[in-house]
Image (tube, rainbow, N blue to C red; front, side, top):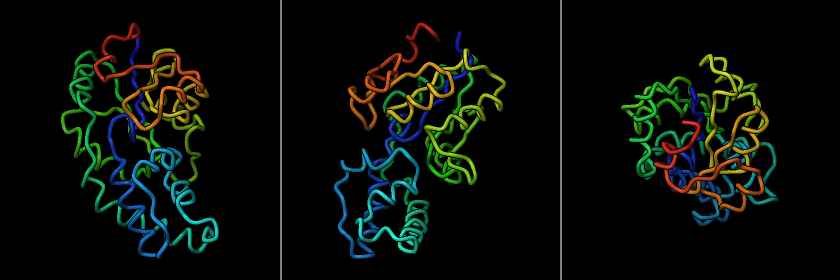
Length: 217
C-alpha cells in the first residue's frame, strides 16, 4: 500500500500559468523584447526558472549578463505577484485532506525556486500538513534528475515501493522513473496525454478525485 504521495506543483497542484506568464512577459516588455502568449508558457515551464528565462529570451539576447538580469527581475516580480491569478485545481484540496486522514504522507517536488514554495503552499493549502517540500536549490540538480525524490524519501522515511509520484509532464514521468517510482500522469495540467504516454506513465488520470480510486491507495 502507498505510504507517500509526491506531487509536482505547477500544472499538478496549482494552475500557476498566468502568473508565470505575466511575470515573464513583464520582464520581456521592460527590456523591449517580444512577449509570448500565455499558452506558449505551457511548454516554456517545467525545467526550472533559469531554463524558463533562457527559453523566452530572443536568441540574440541570451548572453550571460542579460540572462542574469532578466532572471533576477523575474524572481523579484514573481515573488510579489505569484498569488495574483494562481488557483488550486478543483477538488484537489479535498483529495489531499482525504489522503491525510488516511495517514498517507504528502510531499511536493518542484523545479520552482525553493524560496517560493512554502509561501505558496501556506496560502493555497492552509489545511494540508506537508511532510516534505522541496524546490530548486543551489547545488542540487533539477528534475528530471531524481535527487529531489531521494531527498523526499529520506525526509519522510518511506521507500520507493511505498511511493507514488504525480505530475503533468514528461519531466515528471522521467523523474519518477529515474528514482524507481510508479509514475502517475495527470491530464488537468499543462501537457497533453500524448506526452505522458510517450514518457511511459504507468497510470494516467483525468480528475483529482481519481487519485482516491487508484488501486495503490
